[in-house]
Structures are given as C-alpha cells and as structure tokens.
Amino acid sequence: MQETKFQVQITIGTVNELTVQAISDPSEILELEDVLDDFTKKWSKNPFLLTGFISQFMKSNRTRGWTPYIFIVKSNEMIVGTVPLMIKKRLEMRFAQFFMDYSFSPDFVVEELYRDACIKCVFEYLFKKLNCSFVSFHLPSESPNLEIIEEQCKLNGIDFSSYDHSKHFIIPVECSWEEFQGKKGRRRIIRQIERKLDDLGEWEVEYFDDISDRPDLFGKILNVEKRSWKGHTPKVLIVTAEEILMALSGSQIVAKSRPEFKCSAWFLQINGKAVAYTYVIKYRGRALIHKTAYDDTYRKSYVGKYIMNIAIRDMFNEGQVKTIDFMGDFAFMEFWTSLSSNYVKIFLRKGNVAPLVKSLKFFNIVLDKLPDDKKPRFLKTLF
Image (tube, rainbow, N blue to C red; front, side, top):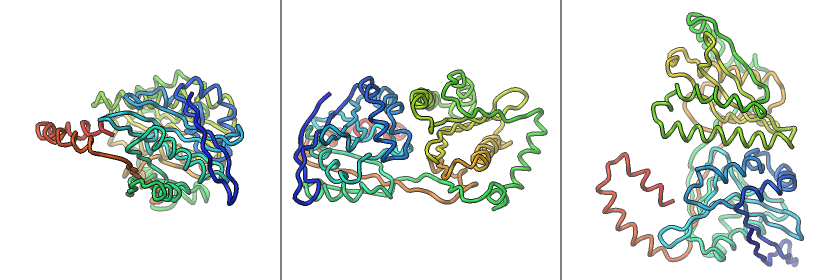
C-alpha cells in the first residue's frame, strides 16, 4: 500500500493535510470492507462500488495488462473519498482509467465537503507523482464531479476534452403495473407471446428472490448463454461467463454484510428446459438489470422479451424499487421506456506526447497491413 500526503485548502482560510492511499491488493480491500462500505453507502447508491464487487473487478481479466488500484483519500484518518482506477505503462507513458466500464456507472465517491479537495489530491497523485500522460473517465452526465474535473484541468494545465458516449435506459417506477403495462399496447403484445409459448408445450417462470447463496445457478445461467447468440462467438461467451461469475462472486461477499442488497433471477422454462433468464441486482431502491439472454432457437417466440417483462412486472408489484436501470441502451429496451441517463467520456492529457506520435507513425504502417476486422482490437491495446 502506497501513501502520499497533500496540503489542500478545504474551506476559505483552512488548509488540511490529506493522504492518498493506493491499494492494489484485493485482499487488503476486503480487510477494509466494513469501513469502506459504510463510507460508500453514505455517499453513493451504486452497489458495484462496494468492496465485494471492487475486489472481484480487481482480480478480473478486464484489468489484464493494467495495475488496478483503489485510491482512498483520508483526512485525520477518516475516509473522505475513494476512486477505482487502473494504470499501465505503454510507449514510455502512463495511462489511467476506471477499471469498470461505463455500464457499471463508476465515479468518484466523495464526501460533499471534501469533493474539490479529493479530486485535486487524486489529480496530484496521477499527474505529478505517477506522471500519467493520459487519463480517461466515463461519468454520468449528471455527476457533480464533472465540473470539478474540468476546473482542475484548467488550474493544472491539463488538456480536457469530452463527448457524449452512451446511455442507460431507465424506468422510473411511479405508477401501478396495470397502468404501466396498459401504455403503448404492451399488454396485447405480451398476450401474443404467451399464445406462442402455449404452442411450444408446457412452460413456466421460475423465480429466485435471492441468488447470492445459490452458486449452483451459475451453470443454469451459463447454459442459456451458450445457446444464445454469444455462443456462436467463443470469445464473447468467455467474457460474458467471466462477468457473470464475477458479479455472482461479488454478490455473495456483499450480501453477507449488506441486508439492503439482493440479487434475483428469473428463468423461463419450456418443457423443463431454461430458455431465457434475467439477472437483477437490487440495492437501495434501484434495480439494475445486469444480464439477460435467451436461447436462439426460440428467437421468433420472443422468450427474451417475455422473461424481461415478467421481471419488470414483479419489481413493480414488489413496491420496493423506485428506478429500474437497464445498464445499457439496446434497441429492444425501448419496448418499456424511452427515458435514459446519459454518460460522458472525458479525456485528460498532460506532458510530452512525442513518444506517442513517434509510435503512431509506426502503428499506421502496421495498421495498413491489417484487415479491417482486426484494427479496432489492435487499437484498443493502446488505451
């Protein structure tokens, strides 16, 4: 664990000494589970920023080639901010970014009073102590940290650029299920799907309220994934399996100490075989639809849409969820909603980029010889 001290102005005329700890060992993160999770719960509603998930992300293949860190900012030994980042050295330069992708809604978790100071300390650590050349963040467009990040860039001579990157479709749960389902003819379409299911044989929906203690269900989920479109692309299936296992492992850790946390799963079974599933994480009034898939054999029967609709119906009727987040922006999600939360990607650059320019000249020569389907993956190795 690395620790660095910074002198930072918190309020007008008041200067505090803040420390930044950079922890890269997942086991050390779990040792701090109670205190870190208490802080995160106070300042964020994002379950993926709890230590159970953080430790799994740090061990996952998504960080291969990078060194993952949790940066913990403290004032008088009290945590006032955290941020999950990973860093790598490439082409004689250092790069940094969140080690979660945008679908998990990563962000700085900071105490309001220390918001500016925390971000300033992290910038000092990244750009001065580590001498990073490029830093990239995906942030919710409504994040209060965006404005502060841009301001810190101006103060420290860091180039800042941003663009609208993606969105999550969301459903505010503000009415009864009957009122919601009656809009846009959803009820009629679902009845049509049910008639299709009747023609296929015996069918039922199997619901598991809390699967955090059901590791056996991983195999059931994976069997559906293998028969989905992902099963035709082995590399995609491998990544999907890793993400599901990571989420289930993280859920088991979080559920032990956070009674307000729950993960549920719905399976549509036809003639005794699971043909579609939806996996949802529930936390503090939010439901995050983490994974869903269906057997390609039943594509024309719309089994994926049906099981998703059942999951949404049950969450409306339970009365404990205020927002349903699809964690993505696929076209089929518009069957239920057109509302979304938007995400911005920002790029920060500082220092001499001559080594990068020199290397890119070489890359251009190599890229000209690569087939088009190989170029995006090759470019991803850079950042």
